[in-house]
Structure formats: C-alpha cells, structure tokens
Amino acid sequence: MMGMNLRSVYATFFLTAALSGPVTIYAEEASQNVIWHNLEITIKKPSETEKPDALTSTLEDYQRMSKGGKVITTEETQKVFEAPLYRPAPFRLPLLSSNGLYTQYFTLKDGKMGAPVLKLNHWDIYQKEGEWAVVIQDRDTYTQAILDNKTRVRDEYPGYMKVMQIPGSDNVATLTPFQNSEIQRLTVHILDPQGKVIRLQIIGNLSDQDLIRLAAAYKPLSS
Image 1: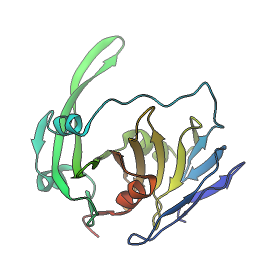
Image 2 (image 1 turned 90 degrees about the vertical axis):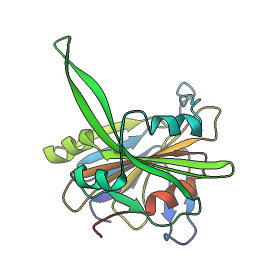
Image 3 (image 1 turned 135 degrees about the horizontal axis):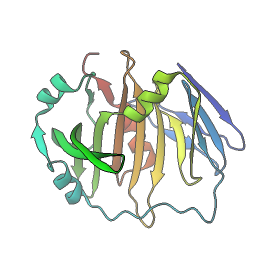
C-alpha cells in the first residue's frame, strides 16, 4: 500500500474488491486514523451533536451546474488540465454527458476583492432510471500544498463520515452521507505519477459499494 498506513483505534474497517468483482465493506462506528503520505485523516467518535448536512440538490440541479460557466470538451480539458485527466472504464450506469467547465471566483485580500480567478474542473454524469451519479474532477490545491510542504498535517472529520482506501490503488477517500437523503458523496484524493493531487467528488444515490466501484474505474488517460 504505497504511502498509506492504516491505524484503527476502536474500529475495524476492511475493503476488499476487484474492479470487476464485489466490494465488501465491514465497518463499526468508531474513531479511525488514516495516514496518507504526510496527511493524517482522523474520523472522530460519533456524537449526537454532530449531524450530516442536508442536501436538496437533484440530478437536474447538477446537470445545470455542469453547464454553469464556460463549457469545453473533454478533449480540450485534457490539453489544459496540467495533469493527466482521469477517465472511467465502463460502469453499470451509462455515461450521459462529459464536459470541462471553467468557473470564476474572487479572492479577498486585506478586506478587498482581488482579481477574478478561473477554476477548471471536469464533469461526468451517469444515470439509469432512478439511479444517478455525478463525478467532478479537479486539481486539489489544498492537499497539494500539504504534500509539497512535507510536514505532517492532521485533518479531523465528524464521526458520521468514513475514510478508506480505493481498492487496487494508493488513493484515499472520505464518504459523507447527507441528512434525510439517500445521496452520498465520495471524495477521492489521487496522487498521480507526476506528484500532482487530483480530486474526484462522486455524488449520487448509489450504494457505498457502487460509489467505490465507480471511483476505482477512473484511470489516467496516459496509462
């Protein structure tokens, strides 16, 4: 397991899978630590005072968001992404749409609005009957800065979340449920061979196993 050391304090969390085979998850609600390179991810013990956020967004909302800026093709995204773009192997849900998207945001410095900054990400949307998933891919500048600094950093997350390794890879992920919803978000951090950190945010109403299976389907175009 390259760059990863799992230390379960009060829990046992096993992931066993092949890309084409079943994924089995056994987990107990308890604290867990994962060390990924120099980033330590800690899941706290469950607390009655900590509840997941509510989510009201629908598939139609995400479809609109995927076009909410300057839209470019997947091929154009690959040329300007500054890292290998990760693309999926066939998944059991059909891929409805794929596109790159530039969005604009502003930074604040000394209480003043700075120049606009363009953010590039790539969107894949899957859907079949009532099941759907959205995969948003971007460069993870926050985690990139941590890994480049080489100093151990500890991030702590609420007890309702889970942390895991994606089978067959060095990729680490957190799974976040939403309150009163069957929708979940799997956030995957990938350190590619060039040392660049890629993030996949996979949001949908799929099971834990299918979210993990979809994440494992993503490989760099150069491979």
